[in-house]
Length: 501
Image (cartoon, rainbow, N blue to C red; front, top):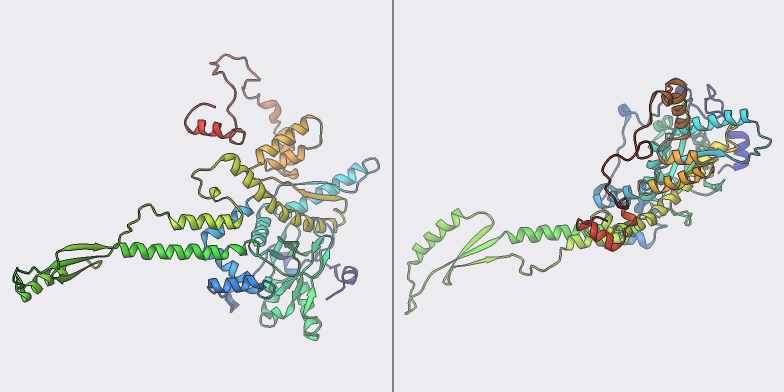
């Protein structure tokens, strides 16, 4: 493992073919000076394929009993369930969607009295360009999904003139051994390339260099720490650093229970479709058959030949009757619906979020806020990794990126708070714009386009509203309709019944 100080002094400075617009000296392979793209595999030389295994409920119980020993198996089981179970996948996607990943860039460690406005503005623009190059809204949701599914995302950055692409590293060959700048560093097992040497070209040049060191000393150089800040790890359960523990591994057994109940219901439904017809061969008072046995067999054969596959027949001296396997207890509860409810309850979320039949809007909003806190904790870890990269560049050492606790469920509430703060003169304009999905660079460009280029402010008249015209229409009277989260339980019931509230 390379020493951090030595790495920063000797190995962190690379010689790119061209200095990128984002600033700083960062790694840039030669082919990226022409083609700004990330190659992940060569299909003409693709000899490997992923393997999948279906894990039993007993396997899951064994892995959960010793998560440190079975870290890899538990991770693979979670990935398998993520693809096989729509309930589990929707749960992960629900949590990953609880953040808009909106952010603001603000000065950091800057004295307003002595700072040069020209210098601050120049570095501020470079920082905004670097954040735009990261494509936060498209790349970071993948980090959230991996963390919520597997607990840890291991990544490295490809940095070019106008793009910063984050490449996910194979989790089975990564570990966390050090934390630098409040961000976990990635230690990589270079034996990964023993059977995949052709894949080295799909990784940054650092991997080729350190793989050569590993081949010279396979004992002491097998695990080597990757250079920061371009390589980083984001962990969901950051209170357990020794091993990865998927956040929702505890509900895997409930997922299997749900599948078992579905199989039982299918078997039960199929069994209910079967029936038996019994043909009676009557007897007289003296105990003799009323019909010749051979003749009765002929009639029974004719009946059996026209019956569907699900219906059987039998010849008996008893009277004709129908025997079916229909469920007798009509008051029995739906076990599948109950199993689904138990699944989401075990995950710590309200099942009403996914099957809203009798939900209270206030209870749902409070449940969502509690769930959002889990996702926001991961977002703050991503924020630390972003700031470590930005502040390592010459232009960004005095700037900081802050991700807001904003989601589709509280966007309106948060925007109203920022707007009210702006009305009292507080500097929250950028934060208000961020909650509306407009970054600071977009806000500046749109303002310049509309005011300076198109001069829209003088060409368009204000829209007519109650504040720009007198009241000449019909006045409905009464107070404005309340939002769902402002209603009491009785108010919700009145609105559902069709009463005005």
